[in-house]
Length: 128
Image (spheres, rainbow, N blue to C red):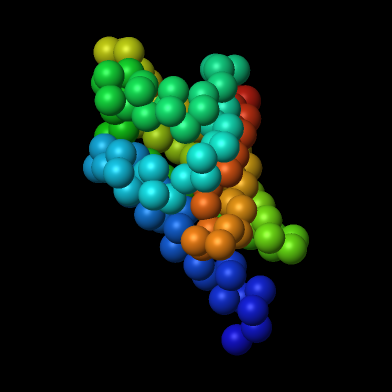
């Protein structure tokens, strides 16, 4: 196995862990996976930092029920991993049942303590 192949496998596993943490409302695990400078964009146009996203989760604004996140590809460039795929979810946002169908880009940064989730950008799929 090449180093790039190993890193790609690690990133895919980390994406699974990130979404699992969201589904299980495991904020400690989500924090552990995240870079302190996280920029988390939403399909609504809002943007969260790590702390504001965690605050929204703690207060119950986001409650994830089901998430499907197929990955189209992972591209590793130096110490950055780009994950291009989809984020399809059934969740409750501020008490309202919501279905999301997005193409998305997740960015992971290799740090001294391992790969950390640095940024997320969804784009709603037209007609979804």
